[in-house]
View 1 (cartoon, rainbow, N blue to C red):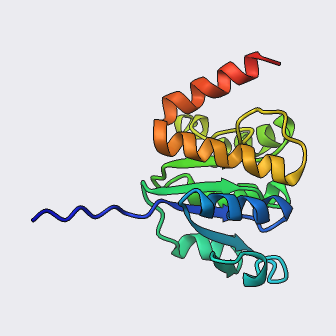
View 2: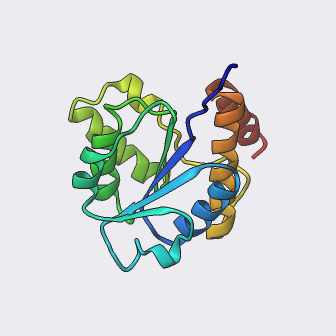
Length: 174
């Protein structure tokens, strides 16, 4: 007999704001095991994220203890670029399946530039999906969460090349 064991595909959401609530629900329904991390216990509360592991702890402290691997997808949607940079500083040296960062192009540029100055290799910074989610014209938190979930599913099922090609096609449609 042959027993095939699949490792669970995990999603770590750094930030527990409005987008995270819908993203956690959509991702769980799409087959991801979801962990939500935020340093605010009133946001990172199990009642807001049913069926998810919820961690209310300092980002740096929690991420240093967290086992991230090639089956872990990471979404950084914190409340500010300082927290984004803290999270990415801990995440990017590790191997992950996906890292995505939310924000305006200016905010993203500031964060990635600061990480480059801290010694994060340019190649790794270029792997970060920014702005996060498929460019479908999303505006509401639910639509943004849907666009992120669609990108995660594309990465999981079709791989990085297809996900980036799909982004390029959709961006060309502006």
